[in-house]
Image (tube, rainbow, N blue to C red):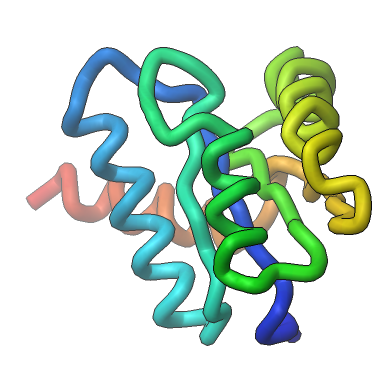
Length: 125
């Protein structure tokens, strides 16, 4: 259960393509509706705004007393294991009283397999 004062940041790679960046906004909106979380912000690692630092600040401005950062990636690669922790540390330095945690990326999960199956079924129609 997500506390009313927990800030959630969903961070992806970021893209030069506006449509790709807009997809993260859709995921953030959907997550906020389905989870009931009050404070949910998007962030892009690079190539687009908002940055992780901007999203972190937005969460704090909305009253977050802790931040959970979710790398919106499939697998644990350099970005989720090195780059995002570095960016999070830099963002958090401005708010030393606001702790943060970083989740694992999406990874291996049967629910992802269900989505893959649905995409395959949709492609056959």
